[in-house]
Length: 317
Image 1 (tube, rainbow, N blue to C red):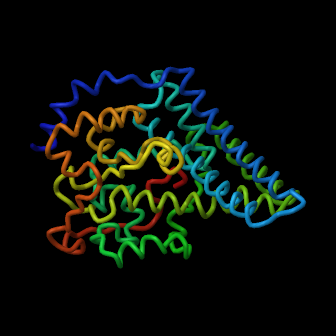
Image 2: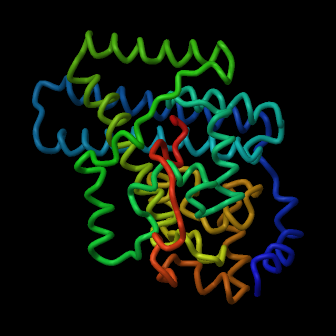
Image 3: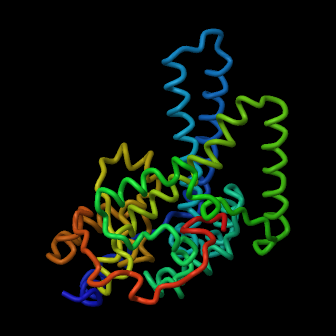
């Protein structure tokens, strides 16, 4: 069944799925802020303990990773807002998108413009601005063990810089949000001066390294080995995980990336329902667990892909 037929078959069921109410949308953003600050507070408490042993060190490492995933959560909310799929109040999508973009030092307007090209021209390195900027990482390469190892090591060795660490301090979202970003940077600097160890471990490393690494790995999960496919069903993938792991690793259900590309206006909290419904379609079912990784019919370089480095599917470009 062609992609358009799948969309027509299920769109009637999905188009009435509720977005978050206005209070719920604001509460969700507030909850992510509280999670981030709360994790930092727990990490600071651990660092101040008189006896800091292996258990405390392991707990601190987990907290650092958790903080980075909360930054990813803000990034994901920006993504949802860019599709006007987060809040029922259309204006709040722009407001909350700008707030969350500012929290990760990005720009909502720039992100939305670039991300819309990703959906309109998925896999075209000239027109898909999300992927054009990370062409150097060759996400189109078939996922052989060697390629997977390269993708795993790239952020660990900081080779994903500078493509995934590009701050956007423009005022395109408004003077308030530009001031907000500048204020957050000043707070981070003051934190570094007042308590260098805590600042480095609980803010600077989670944001500058772990968060950017998570963004890189997520791009690999979403499209690695699939870029260049002529079939939209083969251009994105889902990654099936239990709910507890999804809550931490993919805080806004963004592991269902195939569903998102098929139905970009569907709110993320309905992705599990959509997935279960789509399993009734044989074409989707064959790809539902992310194990369907086709090898491109010809090498990517023969497709005239070209582009310049910049930022990936990351708000801070």
